[in-house]
Image (cartoon, one colour):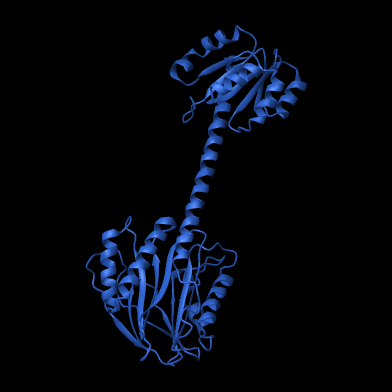
Length: 392
């Protein structure tokens, strides 16, 4: 018995004594439900039975029959364009011309008369196995299409929620900002955002949600919205992430979490307050190509432990300095030698950059990562944000 398949077998033959012979020979399979026979006496009758029994999957057809022969029936079946319908033709021994014509017209296999019931059973089972494999392939193809559709939706969610217009505040001279995300084929949950809290304070954030696909995209959208809504209240960064973390813990989807670096710069003084919730430590760059790491603070990711306290730290920017935020898609990009891009290479690259133009900084890193990982499919989103304090 072929597990996982339920199809009927139609026998097309004008010999009236064939039906009782088959029912007697395969009575055990019929009783167990393994075989379910339908009988037709010519090609026209077979086409009518196909309409009445759409679950017919195997056709055993004689070639020589009145009204419509087996070769003509094959042409009609071909017009149905049903790849799961398999036809086995039965012909006289040595009638190779008709057998060859039948195979050219789409027959799956053939048997010669006089029919051996043992050969017939083997052929039926082989045909059923082929139908099962084909149905599995069609199902997997449909699932892949569905997955791709889901990924496209996730990518649209991810791209649609991120700021895309630069410069976002063209009338501001006291800072410059640019961000970009290069989405991986398998959609992740990276995000960035920035917003004016008041006339003197700019909030900017980057995050990386665990997981892939639509769940990650939705959790990313929720995380970004909560951080923005809470951050606009003007509270310190640690207090903001405390409230966001509690909200995410209450609404967490399948134990998902998010790493976040959230910061606020006072545009009058250049003081940056920040909280790092398990994210990659950012860099401070100046116009001489000098690079400093903003050290990690020991605060944990968001969405895991409720009532977790998050500390607020400060760093002073001088005019012309900027902060580079990035996700691990940068440092964990791999080349064909399975080597990671890493922090050392990133820092060496940043040492070569002068003037700290935000667009230049971000795109230089992206280009270098892509060149490094050339030939290896991108497995994670590559996201960067650079905010330059001009002090004007």
